[in-house]
Image 1 (cartoon, rainbow, N blue to C red):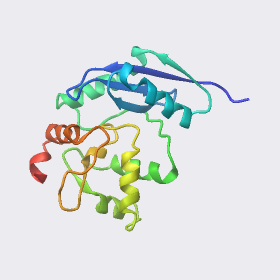
Image 2 (cartoon, one colour):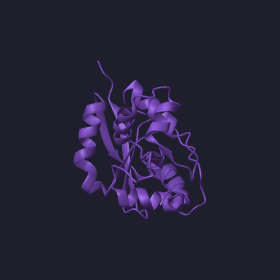
Image 3 (cartoon, rainbow, N blue to C red):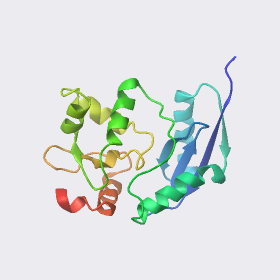
Length: 176
């Protein structure tokens, strides 16, 4: 019999608009751009795909460590996140997401550079696909990946959010 997993969620206001934060007992596992009422349908779909049995519980207190660190990031006081993560994805996706976490604050990498970093130089498109499936944006900084020509390309939350995050980190002016 499969044990039911408790999944907790909360919401915060940010400079990008509301964020829905989702955590398992292992750590933060998902962040959605939008309020709980906006994101609940896609969140439930994501959970059904990745967790066999779960109970979704609104619990702002469980989200507080994530909220605190995100607020510090948005205010320019935090350059690295120190949170437990519960990464749910394919082995390749997880490898890409772990490589993303090695891109320093204020730095950018191209999809091609990231493919080379993980030892898969021909996997540029697959890197883009894994980036697009990143379940924990901002904390796993997929916004730091740009086109080889320095162009601002793709971001699940929209290019305006990507540009805002790069502005916070001071790297937008380097690539514009």
